[in-house]
Length: 249
Length: 300
Ligand SMILES: Nc1ncnc2c1ncn2[C@@H]1O[C@H](COP(=O)(O)OP(=O)(O)O)[C@@H](O)[C@H]1O
Ligand SMILES: [Mg+2]
Image (cartoon, helix red, strand yellow):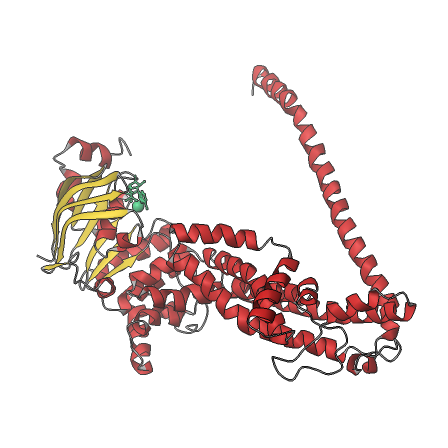
């Protein structure tokens, strides 16, 4: 068992937005988190790399273990955790630097100084994110000049460079055109071999195509969690049924 | 489309025909705005023209490199502009690091504490305090209590106090303009807060910060009142060689000359104003250039 969330509650001030979520995720699988807007998918995702720590009034309760390590233990180094658990955001957020420096940044803040090693890692990460061929001749150019889809793949490459074992993706394709979106989808599929992936998505087709397991959230509760095929073809709860057939949300 | 539908549209068009009024409003405001803009530009041009007309003939190498004199025709502004340069550099050295650090601290490290709120309100108020008050503070604190006298250092410290609020506020504004997603991206890669600020936030905000500090400095070199209060002299026949020497600056020299009745002195003043304005314009130009250049690079 790779990732285990036990009875996770999240509060924003007095708002109780995640109400005791328990689920376990196997290594090298893709898990899709679905549900209507505001049901707590992003909040749940941010628990795994403790990005909620940055939100002033957010409070997380319960337990999350990654390979047996309690990531909310006081002795945990949050910066190390975030290197192990990478994240890709909804809106591509490349740094206002060159393409090369975007990918190299994670290594540099890790104290890697060996330029040959950095170059090697940049290339392999860009290849891993299926971007290398498009940018290999303009690595020194600003990342902001790339298209939205390319920027998002750059953000994935950036995350891959620090060698995470888990990747969190919060609606990574929702801001992109259909072609770029498909590319990201294919990329997620290819990354599965080496990473454990949690992906938030609003796109039912995307969820059913890319994921092994799907978790359906509704108003802070985990309503149903099952194999993707089972959940989409034979949901046990009516809520799930209504949601995936588009009857609400 | 049937007859009925047609008449419906007609009715609708008629119903909306009074939106014409908004178009007139729009036009009217456009011309009013243009008029206001023109007033500003024309007045500025007239002033500039007047100064150039009166001062340009007086402006030559001897004037720029000449020492002060009681005879208008022989007087130069060498000590004055060198004094202004001294003040400029020293003020920058003192005020920039302190102001930028303070802005950084308030914006990134202490955003929502009560202390920070109180400081914020006070800084906003300080920015509106008349500059002569800073002069009095400088006189008491630096010239008298710290016994720095009427020195360049006293002047620079006083002007530093004067522009610190501006630097702090503009630094905070520049940092605020850096999108949160950049910080998020950095933290998500395991960067520490220090690394995130140092490698991402500051570089992304640097053009805004520089623009702010340069503009604040160009304000400082135009200040006259506080320097008169701390006792900067008009007649300084030598340039300062150290931070404790006495000094004069261009605005004080100009102030002195315009207060004399003779026409020759007012010509001197106009010529000195040209130099002072040139320095200010150059600095503002640098600020604009920096902003323009970085904006092209940093966009989101
Ligand atoms: N930083 C925050 N502060 C306060 N409330 C928040 C914050 N972020 C999210 N919320 C609230 O928490 C709930 C869950 O949000 P979120 O996890 O973003 O939902 P989802 O990603 O499923 O759309 C929403 O009601 C939202 O308004
Ligand atoms: Mg969300």
